[in-house]
Length: 326
Image (cartoon, rainbow, N blue to C red; front, side, top):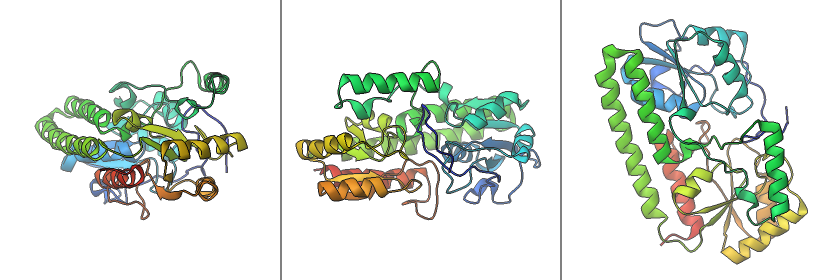
């Protein structure tokens, strides 16, 4: 595996070399490559972008995705075929800074409509959330490391896990679709409104479900849930911070064990696309339970839901149980 540190989520994966042709996508079930259909052809960088394109585009779009179901997206590498097909698309929808190879390919592509989700909402720096209780020196060192490896700023890209921010992105995507394919603008607008209602309902469910809990602290494998935590008044503590493939120090493990007792933490969450070894070791040593909190970077047969809303609802139930919701 290609393990390296980086300012974003830091997950190591096997490089992707095949185009994900939307096997889970109703809009791309015909496996038509971008640019080869009579529809508005959209290339999505990974699942959260694919979901938006499908929901907003409806019957008028053909969506292909660069990240296959089950692949962890952060270290995606593109084949020459994928890069060429991207250039044939009518639009590309991506989240800048999440997938460096995609960013580079899009920068060099002459595709007319380039939609960067990172420009459609405000990104924040959650890089040091997991070190709030670890001392200033540790936090400063971590921030400096992120700075030097990630450029001038290290912004958390996981905005899709906040339904409110995801809705803001959806609105911007709809406006871009309307401008690029004006013949179907009315339908894009209506579809976007329907999606907005789904996301508003999800936001309400999270607010109500997490309003009164025994604890506000949850442990995760890595710091993917900063926006969600901030939105609903929770505190995320990540075992491995930005790099879930690294081993946490004994001091960090001890720190988390002490915090679990102090804050009434019951559960250590892990992800379907990342090894659960460290989470289960911590849970065993601290006498805690384990469960899945899905960062929704892809839908697989292991996902606790068929789409974004379904998995987010499963995440809510998991948090309600772990935090002792009233």
